[in-house]
Image 1 (cartoon, rainbow, N blue to C red):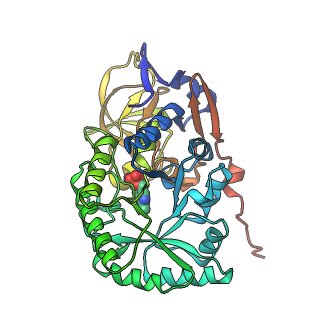
Image 2 (image 1 turned 180 degrees about the horizontal axis):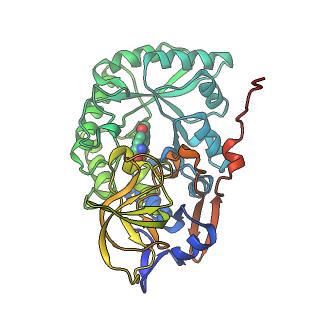
Length: 419
Ligand code: LLP
């Protein structure tokens, strides 16, 4: 459930009409709801009941400092994939000792910084990375906690670009080779073998692939035990899907019930770490954009808006469907079918296709489910400054990122002397 709803024809974020934000802050712009972010975070936290667990919010899904600050306030953990994300977490008041560092390509500088900050755990994806972390840790004689990301070869049944648990994907160490990797880690003096981790993909809408993955990883933990390798946690990654259109993904409680059932059936009592991103942030945000022109074609009608693929990439990159609603329902214009397109010079630049709407130039539209993988994936393509972000809290709102200025956009660029 989210806190975006119509009241007498006007679309609201909590108690603030979105038309007010569009007018005051301008469009395009992202709007997040504090109550929704908190509700989703707490729903996951409570879903574990008394099973020992920690939520490591996946920073990549929405890394705005205001949003991270809210999760820090809830004493969340954080799953990061770069030193930039770690710096954001620290800047927002998050605790480094509640950070796990995922990703296949950690550089020496990133590892060194994360060791200095004393993060909770490195989620390691290759033998070479184990060696690299051990060697960087030896510089300061540190002992660093690691978990190995195993690739269980499970089909997550999601978009191929966001499927990560198959042999053909670059992620993790094949589960069949992983015992060997743990033996290797145990022999490295600056590593402390702490856990095991997995993440098979994103936007999963059924429990089966998760269950399959849990069983494979739990059997693997048994195998490690017979080798005398004891762990202190199991990190199950992220991936739980959300409703964009007509998907009905499992509720967090269904997910955790299944997980705990699998743990109990294996006699496993390990504390669980989980790295949810989308399920917390996606439906806690909308993207506001204003219709500039209505353009009638022979085969299609176009509503040309001021938001584009550089601001919200998911429709162009994954052919993702996100609901598009008018901020004012009471438009007098006729209902027609439109492609909602941006000003960028590519036919991939659309926010939605074949949508039935009553709109005219000047109307504001809200693209829903834009809180995850929205602003974080924006760019300056076509020299478009990146949009602002707004956090609504009850009947107040805060600009948590200003609209980028032209000067900010070209900062750091130089013209050589061509004479
Ligand atoms: N943990 C790891 C190791 C991950 O790679 C990811 C996401 C997550 C956690 C969080 O997954 P979530 O709970 O959000 O599904 N840009 C794509 C999604 C890419 C997800 C990448 N990894 C999209 O817009 O659909």
